Length: 262
Image (cartoon, rainbow, N blue to C red; front, side):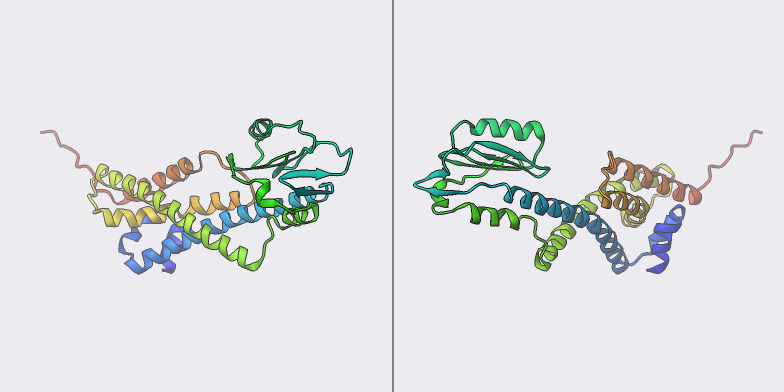
């Protein structure tokens, strides 16, 4: 396994060594690349949850006293309607009936905020990732500002169990994404094998394809782990893989015989 790791990450121009990988080594290598992708995705998700927690606490600190009674928002006399925006939330508080749900939806689209919550005069509005959730004041009878603030304070809390669930979900998602990329690159390797007259079976080309995406996977994952968005990431990965495969195949491809003139 060690020599294949060295080949994939240090000597990508010698990928043809991968043709001798056993099924167990292939599975282990795939698991390793999926793990690299998982750390990148987990970092992004953890950052997102940290931002949710920070923004939730900010919203919680700005909720005025209220109660939900008789399916209606009840507040202190003279309480004004207001809007509070963070990176994660767009919060509307409207005991006076001056804000419509359509206005909240329009602002969510315009400001590109993932979560919108509106405590309106006779209804509650909840929108997550452009999906409106069916929540009503009938379900929240007796809720007051203290309980609602506690709910916001719980957003994005990173308990060990939450981190474990995030990691498992991220690993499964990474493995699926990697399997898709591997299939595309394996088909490309198959075409290059035929073009260079190697005529290798698909199994050998698939082994080479998996090693070929080692370097771009590591580099792009490291960049994304720091929160930077990489445009055309898959296309870049495909381009690097194609170059490494072509270089490796060309070094062992049969040479064309020169025709001699009489």
